[in-house]
Image 1 (spheres, rainbow, N blue to C red):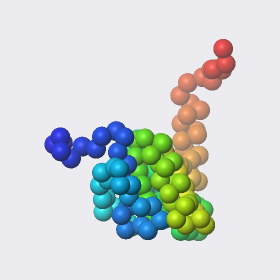
Image 2: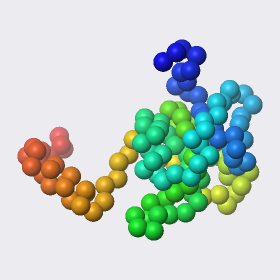
Image 3: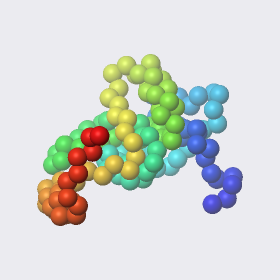
Length: 130
């Protein structure tokens, strides 16, 4: 990856198309074309693995009840996401937001049962309390 395209670890990427999270003047933000499209939490989590994600919730999935919406910002620095949350609530007090770490994996139904069965057969239980 070329040096010029790498983000510094403290840089937050904001969705410039979203009026509720204005780009801060003091920080050089980049526009990310994937931010404006509505996504599920699972999609955003897999896309921004290892980063904090701020999502505006616009609805839920009828089957899994998982939140869906648009990604407003993502960053490796949690405090930058907290600042974006404050800006969003300041400009639109009733906005519904969801902050989560990228890389989460939620399992449902048969996939969850298979993962639990697989985990139960791997290692004997060890109490981690010292």
